[in-house]
Amino acid sequence: MEKGICIFGGERAMKESFLCYESGDSLFLIMLDAVLHILEAPANGQECVKFQDQEIPVQDFCRRFGGYPREESRYAVLLKAGERIGGFLAEQILGVCELEVERFKVLPREVRGQANAFLQEAAWVETAGSYGFLVDSEKLF
Image 1 (cartoon, rainbow, N blue to C red):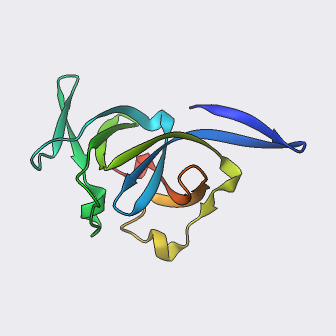
Image 2: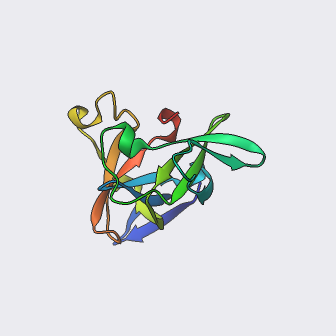
């Protein structure tokens, strides 16, 4: 995991690196150390991508939870969660951003709910001009 210390006016702030991506009308963040690889999204509604001679299932979380993508997903982001490998689709990948851990806010229980259990916190992403939801890769698959 990429970590750094940032000092502002004598205060120390821990920073972490995140992959920043869009799905539907929302911005999401996932810890960079959870990302295994980024591939082109599968074509024609296929639900798997081939990676190192393995078929890896990828999920469309936007559609799964009743959302509507603004455009077709262009990327399959593969994650390693423990011994499991899985993936999800992303319409846009905005890049890697470093955010101060202390700036994350816990999402209200009503927002998380059972369907969104993999979302726990959110933080303002200045470069995107939006809040990003932190995805817990361990709870995705």
